Image (cartoon, rainbow over all chains, first blue to last red):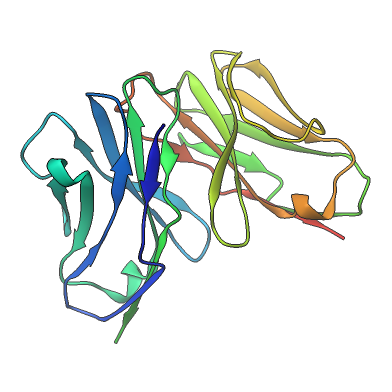
Length: 114
Length: 113
């Protein structure tokens, strides 16, 4: 069975600092894809970044990067130089090669304070 | 503009009424989804269609029924709504392939009174 777990319910940081959001996953697929999404206060959900399981190099997009630790089934999201507008709910998600949908974690609320 | 469009944005109705939500995507994607997001922000898959074919049908009450006229449209009908149906209903679409991410619509917020 596929499962995505985000243990941090809420994180609060001061702007311009770096924050890491944790995520662990379970899958029996040998090949799978890991995603992070952001949901803003308006309710809009946008895709941020993806890690392919067969790639050793951590994905990076702008000030988002991933810490992929395959032996630990872990995919952390790192946001550097946080800004107020990074305040949102962040969802970790996974899709295995055998799946016909993406499985989402419960989300982590990030609050960035001035 | 290419995106996923949902109507209405917000709907208030009474227990027992029937409601319908519309979703259209102009991205040329083959697969569309309906998710329910509750007050705790949890995202739960309800249905998925691939090119008008139902491919995911999670355990949802029978009063929920999806309708797809073509691969660009996926509507959701709820017969005889109940208070626990109050939630945000999110439509999404994706191209083929397990590495494809979703594009979400802005959601339809349903309040059942």
